[in-house]
Image (tube, rainbow, N blue to C red; front, side, top):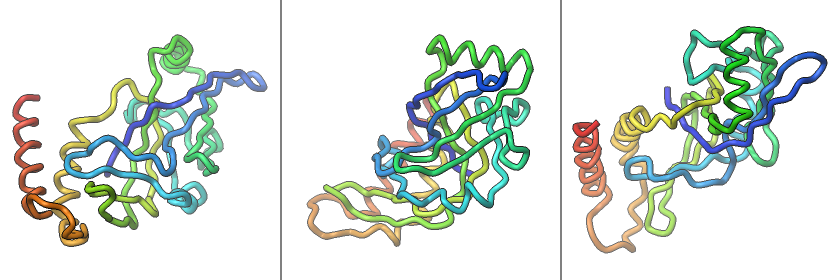
Amino acid sequence: MEIRTIQSEFRVENKEGKAQISGYAAVFNELSDDLGGFREKIQPGAFSEAVVNDDVRALWNHDSNYVLGRNKAGTLKLSEDERGLHYVVDLPDTQWAKDLSESIKRGDVTQSSFGFIVDSDEWAKQDGETVRTLTKVTLFDVSPVTYPAYPQTSTSARSILEANKDRIPDDGAESGPTTTARLDIQKKKLELLEKTL
C-alpha cells in the first residue's frame, strides 16, 4: 500500500447535531514533490470506481485504532469532483474525535492523506523529469494527518522506480546519465537518507 499526503482545506461543521470534517484527500493534475527520482500526479477519474466499490475508512493519522468513519456504514461520504477526491466524515462521539476536531479548528492539523494500491498508471518524461500519472487506484483510507509520511513514501518510491524502470521512457533528448543510471543514483541517495533517519 502507498500513502500520499497533501495540504488540504478542512472544514469542521455541525450539521443536524453531528460534528463533521470535510476536505480533499487528493487533488487532480497537480505534480507532487520529488518522490525519490520521480514526481506524481493523479488523473481525473482515478477514484471513480473506488468511491462506489471500495470499502473505505476515514482514519486519524492512518491508525486503524482511530476510525472516524466508513463509507459502507454511511458515516463517510466520498466523491470525485473537478478538483479531486472529496470526503465528508460524521465524527464519532468520542473524546479523541473531539480533540481532533479542535486541533483542526486551531490549524494544528492541516493535511490529508490517502492510502491506496495502484491499479493502473502511466509513466512519461516531462521537461526532463520522470512523471508517474495514477489513472486508477484501489482506495483503502482517507486520513487527516499530523505529518506527511516521508519515510514510508521514500521506501515505496524506491521499489516503485525499480519495478517500473522499463516503462519509463528515455527520450534521448537529455544529456547525462541514462534512466537506469539515474535510478541507481536515486537509490543510493535514498539509502543514504534512510541511514540518517
